[in-house]
Image (cartoon, rainbow, N blue to C red; front, top):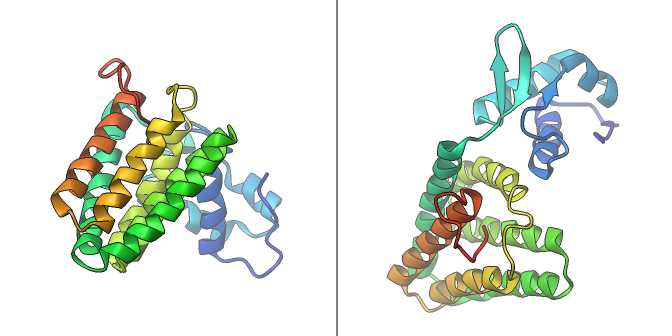
Length: 223
């Protein structure tokens, strides 16, 4: 459930709560958002709710349908492809910065994220594996220290979380997922720029194949 905001509310705080619930699936694709209901649940006026909804609509997470209302976006096959192509483009730009800079430090930090993912896999916690997956990609872009890449990536990660909810049960061996991330981290650590790009592209292709099984039912990896 949405949590009441005890301090003075702002549209950014409200947008962050809504964004989180969309990402986690608490507000699933196609769900309708009603300003009055949200305002009552959060204990705020409808003005900042309206502005928060406008922000998320601009980000593409919500869609406004004339005479019907506002709904959580639903992704078709082309949307999914576009999300992963765009996210990979941002991550390749960030990874290039890392590989050309202090790749050893960046790679070591990413490998720590991989170990968290592997621990979650060993514990059989699929949700924690997905969270570690997202954290890996978030850390990769964050370490590039590019505000613009980070800004673009933030919305793409929320959309990715929505896609990850559809991946549950679509892979048999989580260790393959872990090893894909390990390979990306090791290539960054070793400063192998071309290998980093190849592995990020392969990672993207595997994700698309999992999410669109008609086009690629034999993929063995996840996000």
